[in-house]
Image (cartoon, rainbow, N blue to C red; front, side, top):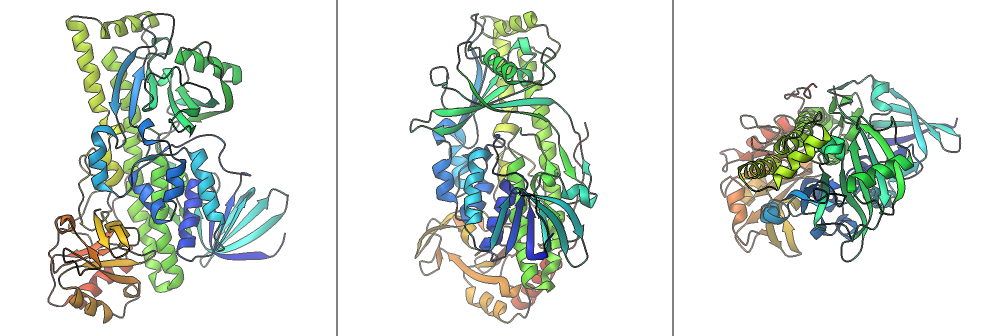
Length: 603
């Protein structure tokens, strides 16, 4: 074992959340190391949907062009559909049951475009991770090491020491001021004695990554996900679902796919290649399909959240902090947003130890969001099969012949057919919580933490389907486009990396004087941003939309954090603006207050 290496930050795990953490640390000038136990990036597809909040983060980190170039063509991801199969031996096979818009496309396009400078993007994890790795490794501040397994973690009062075993058999010890665990909960949480809370082993699932030419079989090439409802497999979860992975041709034809399903009573205990190939062919109803299997993965659905997100100088992010069902596509997004919340606070604490109180706000802010997301995703999972299958008259206990008879009714003339079609239409509306949860994706807020709350706010909006922009503290600053001498910018761009933006208008000079006269560690991280309808402003609100969205008077102010969250606002210019600013900064810097926590729903 060699001597001890030292870094300000060690990141354990080089998946998408760990690599994003690395990119954000480099962006803020923080030297760090990343240790990933696998020899390379992921070989099995996992998450595919990156919501607007996540793309905003990657956009700010300079990845927008690479992400857009690699992502699925927008016209291929705007809908999800349900089929009995794509083909088969009877007239009931190869029938479409329902189709609906989703993910900010189609009927939702204008709504999503108004909310963010970024669009909902589909980029499978196996294609995202190489992009993140290349950007992480390009920074001289990052020591990114794959094939390096962290085996021990010793968390002291003043530092953290980890033992790292490399692929060549060598071992070394590394000391850091702070550790960020993005290892999926495989090592660090266990070593620190942090338990996961919530239901586990809900459904035994299997997924397959395969190559195939489906261009001649797809009924609708605008669907990202195709669900199958085959009574021979007991309903939608057992019948499975299919989504495309790219790489995509200029026409949007995908070369690779994922098929996933829950285990059926007749399935083998574990699928081998031939068994999996047979299951895919049977669910799709394409006996002559030529399939090239790439990998098979067995996994259990769970909705668990760590009992705490911090142990001293160690912080949990991503799957190390929460493991969430994929229904609603919130898991990876929540993890990247964890990193965005944490990294600027670590950078501030490293530069000025008097700001280490900011780190107390990480768990206070992020754990309630993780709990809410776990509950939402668990609800979506339980709702999905139940709602669609019930509308069709199916249940896991329905005999195949009865199930096919129920499906036949769906396409029949007369009152029974009308009633079943109405029930399916209602099921599609209820599934808005899974496919159009714009409020849950964009509207989460912090009730307490590094902010000055106004009577409290909620961790998710009351209506998950609707995103209502607000400048209330704890919420993300509303987006609108502004004109600048350098071109168009979003209000989300007002805060420079690692810095706060004091957003003002008519009384900018008074606010600037108040800030300049403050001797406060946070004041040194605050820049003044003038935004108004006057052409002389640095940020010109040409359409007057910001004037409506800011929710304060022209002489008021918003204080926006480095992670685009509003920390404080004042409706107008106070009698003593310097005193008001000092009080706000004191509250933010001492953000050790405990907000609501809660635990994920039990099974």
